[in-house]
Image (cartoon, rainbow, N blue to C red; front, side):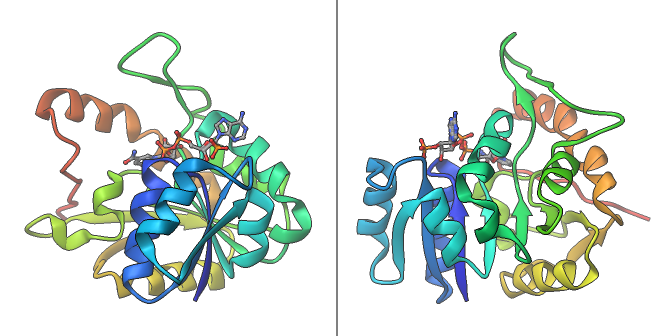
Length: 214
Ligand SMILES: NC(=O)c1ccc[n+]([C@@H]2O[C@H](COP(=O)([O-])OP(=O)(O)OC[C@H]3O[C@@H](n4cnc5c(N)ncnc54)[C@H](OP(=O)(O)O)[C@@H]3O)[C@@H](O)[C@H]2O)c1
């Protein structure tokens, strides 16, 4: 599948490489066409890897990942150009974390709104599926990296888009995927971050996940 990744940070790099390893074609997008981190990632990942602007990556992808800083995700999507986004599935990994007062960060939006919803409202033709934001990027497309059962949450308004995302995630070995409902449920998965960052502070590793027992 052709996949566009918005973001040249550790998340874009890590999931981009896993997608390439699995045979997908990936274009990584940035504010500039000649981003050094994106160029280095392409060099390390071979012929199915390419890079360009946010707009190039969005135009390329049948599915697009939002792996940008939450505070600028809307700006990055605006640079992607709505015409490249309309009708497509966006897997929104971003978290609205505010580090302006240090660690632990606070959420810049919560309770009655979420970044996932803001993206969906701003780009109504985009099929936003919030997923993967509650785990470290080393586990996102590598669930076997942890021993034992552990769980993932998705939500979004479009059932077909959620099926596509679920199938993609299952192809990487995810088993316990909980569909929480429409995109307003991004409030809940983003509000798991205050717990996640405290566990990170306690464990001194990001190599963990939540498991639901009924
Ligand atoms: N680290 C994890 O394991 C993890 C886990 C779960 C969720 N997340 C979430 O995943 C997202 C990505 O995290 P990350 O650490 O990989 O990347 P990041 O550093 O948060 O974001 C990198 C991207 O943001 C873009 N950017 C920065 N300022 C911008 C601006 N003013 N306008 C437009 N774009 C701008 C950069 O563009 P350029 O390429 O042009 O520099 C770059 O592509 C975050 O929302 C994070 O909360 C991370």
